[in-house]
Image (tube, rainbow over all chains, first blue to last red; front, side, top):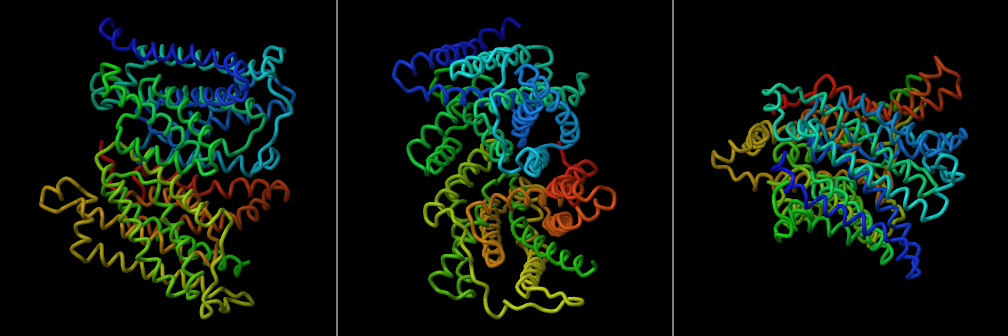
Length: 322
Length: 307
């Protein structure tokens, strides 16, 4: 235990710096008269939650899921369905979203985990597409066009999310909570076993651990946490559509992780913040922003293995391994 | 009813053949190099756009089709040289990152050059008629021609893979890459060949489909995911598997959309059946894939997964 602490400190410190920087975004944005920055930062944090959840299974469990955006959709549609039924409380919506995501994840995860490698990537993609097409053809909820929400959720009856700032700080609080929870989880016995199966499932079996229950549990936890991001995404956009769960989104989430560096939580978070920031920034600049964004991705993949974390490590700004 | 079934069966087979043309190259890339290539669908799209452009300048269908082949081959070679070659030894994640980036770059380039509006390509006159099918129904000659061309390509591929030296190396490479390399074959050159030929086949598929469907920037995306389904059902690295799986997926998808609601009406209210049919039909191929992987985790014709 003691020998691990010093190595883990830098990424925790970096995460705290990121949280501190995020916390001062609203006052600064107000001061310089650019309130849209708060909206952009909220989106960045929503995807940071999603990326953190994916990092648990992809970074720590070596399960490359190409259908993770489905859970973003489950969260968003939970808000749409419940608010239509008159239930506007954020906490209830989050609970319902997590329950739905967990149910889908238990079934599809158990089937997906029968496969390995390329097949796992493809079968999670297939389940993601299944969920996507289900909501595309769900005409009661607007089908392909999606559906606009009447209002944002309330928190215990208080309309906390109505203001841009309120939404921002609730999202930030959730981000910190998810990060802290995952940080604890990855250091726990459960996290160690999961990391062990990433390194060698065979050796873990040899010392008496069946990888499957650990992998499936991680898969379900990741799905639940991603559903929280979906709930916040719906609240941020005040609109829900199947586009949230398209395979492009799943790909983008993997991109965030690889860009930031996998298996460190902080890397996933930083990757998401940078990716969304880059997209929003480039989109403001040119309608053909995807060209520049795509080129950046190709160049990072070619010349900077390990993403930005790898780059920092090579520049000796971060010492130590994973 | 039987006529309708026959018609949809042919449509399904035609769609399946198309999927096979795109999947054939990709399954080898997956299988031999264990390389995740998300950008393969873009080559299909490039084929469609090059076809539309050539038709615009030459006005001759056959000449345009003949020009699509070298152009998409060249695009494949350039991509291999600039990007793919450097990623063979990397993790799947780096490959996803790079090829996802390529999808964005190439789709955006296409939008810049040709705009986002769908383009249409005229059918050659000699194939634009239709032939009588059982009863009063007729079937377009062009679609029959697509099926015929696809089948000949499949037979050609089978010949190359089963009967030639290159094919022998391909099969050996799919089975054990490092062994083939150790025995003195330049595996990287072999892969370049596979990749370029795969790009050409995908481009060819995009070109011959352009008179039936329109050419638009999203066409690569929609076929790519179905191609993955085909490859996984057939077994990664198996061209034979890809052929059967492509036909299966094409037919299941087409028949499901047509007959799903009709069958459901037997057990449900018409309105509910229509809604349920619309919901289930697009999910059908994915359910099929999940079922196949559940019972055979390495696909129908795949080798047992090691590890």
